[in-house]
Structure formats: structure tokens, C-alpha cells
Length: 90
Image 1: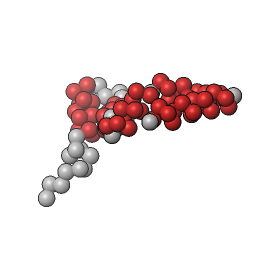
Image 2: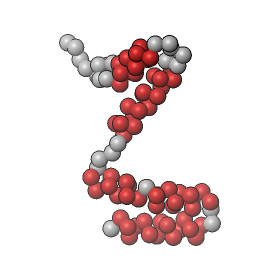
Image 3: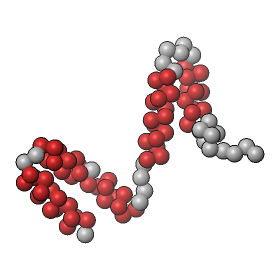
Image 4: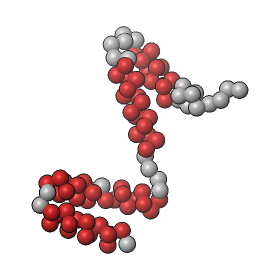
């Protein structure tokens, strides 16, 4: 069913002659297995991608610290639920 809808999409993008739409069709084609897996299961990796973003941001903020253990501790604290304020201590 999904493939039946993607096929006209690819044809329209190819017939448009617009480089942006051709690039979009290429991207959708490349990610087709992942897109179909999400549609079938509803499972996404958004949580892990968000955690990776937080780690990179904290590492960027801590750049220049001379103590790598302290930098690792800051990253760990930023990615835990308690560090993000998600746990209620009351």
C-alpha cells in the first residue's frame, strides 16, 4: 500500500525537473526501509538522537576543561532524568 503511493511521488519528482524535488526523492528512496519500518512499528530513535544532541552540547560547553573525568561527569549528569529535572523528589 505504501509502495503504491511512493511510486507516483517518485515519478512526479522526476518529471518536475526541479533539483530540489529530485534530491527529496533520492533522500526518501535512501531512507525508504527506515520510513517503512517506522510506519509498520511506530518505533523511532528520537530518544537516542536527543540524548546524543545533549551530550554534544555539554561536551561543547565543557571544551577546554583540563579534567576529562569532570567533563564526563557533566555529560552524564546532563543526560540522566534527575539532571534534566524529570524526577520528582517529593
